[in-house]
Length: 357
Image (cartoon, rainbow, N blue to C red; front, side, top):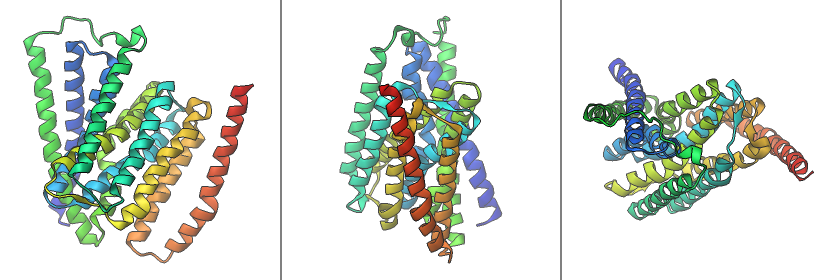
């Protein structure tokens, strides 16, 4: 990979973050002016905005025939959102889990992960699969809006009651949205081109690059939002942002990409055998951890972060066919993972007993 390509790759990540920030700010301010409640803005506009980099990268990758990068980007982002982002945010401060997220969004995230695994089991994700995912996206957004309207009265308040309805302010926000979309498109082009060049120069597949470098790069808006929310004491936002983004990554990003892709998105055997199961297990693992006191403690954040490091290390060892891969796999399967499962079962049982008493 040339020096210029490397520079464009880094600049592409910066443009994605900048574009997503402008898109979120412009959309949120415009929605507030129209009179949409803060809860609905957070669950729809902001969540869609932080998933915009994944969508831009996925569409670009499909258009240039790099479908592995598309799938790797979505799967890798979902894994990074839970293990890396929640891990980092929980290490900053223990994260609170809202009852609504535990009762509605987490089961939806698990269901979406299982559905994606099922749809990909035939080796590709075609236009019909995309239609199914987009229909579920519409259902998810509608139920989110309707349930928010039925919520407490204080959640129905408008973000700002000041007289913001003037043409200049509306045009400014529309300009932010347009500029954000333009930066997303340009950033996605440079990031994808750089990632493909990077993978080819190292002899690593586009799937691995998508699962690691591109996934983390497109998840940077979620990282910034969640860690900043944790630092500011708005700890419920960190969890809701991650869970909502994971749902939208599957239903919106992959659904819309598959719907408009010129050909079905091929699913590599390695993704079916390892990465999709890992993504699903990570989603399911949120239930017992979130249920324990309805919070994510620092040690659980450290556990998430440790597993993300182990997952990334496994991908790199597998890609380079390292001699230590077998030893690493045996250690994870026979010691680390079983010990974690037993620990979570014991803690969950204690919490259930405490709630009953």
